Length: 98
Image (tube, rainbow, N blue to C red):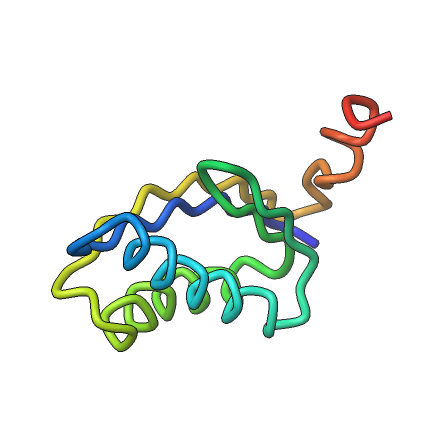
């Protein structure tokens, strides 16, 4: 695992319920990739290979639009270490969930 990405997808929606529905579809897609991920109240973090994660980030926009959002804004944080591994989700947060 040479990268970690946190993505917050903010689709245009006519109501809070519609916004949640679209975001839930994006989260379902992320989970379907089989990569380790952690869903938080503001963003979802995914771990894996850098190139695969960038493809997932790109697809998240398309999923939101396909789900009915007329447009989508996203905020992405990327940690990339081409040689070696990045800190895992588990190492970062497990101690805070005991």
